[in-house]
Image (cartoon, rainbow, N blue to C red):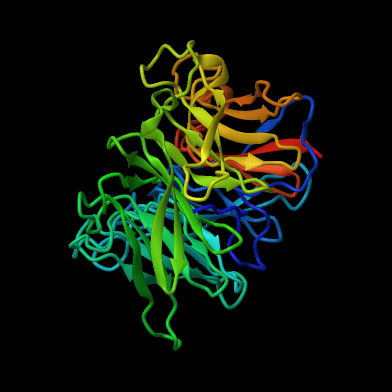
Amino acid sequence: MKAKGYFRSAHSSCVVVVAAAVLTYGSIALASGPLEKTIYSFQGSPDGTTPFLGALVADRAGNLYGTTGNGGSVAACVDCGTVFELSPPSSKGSAWTETQLYSFQGGASDGKYPYSGLVFDKQGNLYGTTVFGPSSTAATTGTIFKLSPPASQGGSWTETLLYLFPADGSRGLGPYTTLVFDTAGNLYGTTNSGGVGAHCACGTAFELSPPETAGGAWTQTVLHNFGSFAEDGATPDAEGGLIFDRHGALYGVTQGGGKYGYGGTVYQLVRENGQWSENILYDFSLNERAGNSPRAPLTFDSVGNLYVSLTQGGVNSSCSLTTQGCGAVFKLAPPSVSGDLWKETILYSFGDLKDGRFPNGGLILDKAGNIYGTTSQDGLKNKLTRDNGTIFRLTPPTLSGGPWTETTVHEFGGSAYHDGTEPTAGLTFVNGKFYGTTALGGPEGFGTVFSLVIVP
């Protein structure tokens, strides 16, 4: 099925443009001098640690919100994870202020390990997932939660568990996903395992619908069980989730599956007459040189092409550290004949050390067609470890069919440079700057939040 479209973020009047969006600036020129700045370093419990997979989100005041997969202030669960807010400085040169909005409890009644990012609703509530659920039921089920802001300034945020995935795994296990809203207030996401596929319990795509009356239960519906047929995808990517096109179809990636059982897929979910069906748009296992492990979230451009990064694969012969390749950035164009596979183009293949390897997070496009993203390893500042990572920009060719140009915008240096390491989540664009997180590094080694200055 031919399905052109555009990215649609959560329907929230509280949220500014965030990751996976097409930037409105014509092009972005990088400022001279230092570009990247660590604006916060996590301290370890009772603070959070390891901001892992989810890109940051922002409100209209420029406050940033995110999760840490570990840490926290609960004595009985000091590594269950947190939700945090970072507020910009009140005067030039002063520090950003971190506030721990919620520290997960674990135990018999709460989830733990919120590896994903967050999404706002119109009222300013935050929604997210935890990988594990209450230990009294099953440690690997997972939850979907809501955080409501305080009624008065300075009060505490309130957490509500909206859904606990059943222990039998029939409705999915391990929701690493960042959720997305539709215009009716339903939430959508994926689990990277569980479900009842005919060939394997390889994950699910699901919808969570709000109650018809206040205080009622939210309803979860499985839209697709991965592994339902022989050539289906398997294991929806843990680092992203789903995106909408303008027609209401959903798009995502799987890290495995496909015709030969490996490589991964890009898929589309379409609703017709109340039923959802899956279309495989591209099968990475059909292209040996492409490698595998596509990373979500996907990104649309203004004419309906999809962009995705792969942690492995590519065609760079200088990548000598792994036989599976150092990663690549792909473009997928809709087919001219409805029902055909989408056409793939490798825009750039990463090599060793200099330009980084293993891109993990989502991609951001500006209006001129430049692409921004991160690699989780390498960069020239790797004096003690190869795990530092980079921020990169890909510039389109001046002539059609020519090569794209990669620019390493920043090389993370780790603690030796008072910097973070391993930027495993995507970037966010807010008020003329990029923001992101590193899973490790900083003075205490527990991860950082950074900004990247740009000039419109």
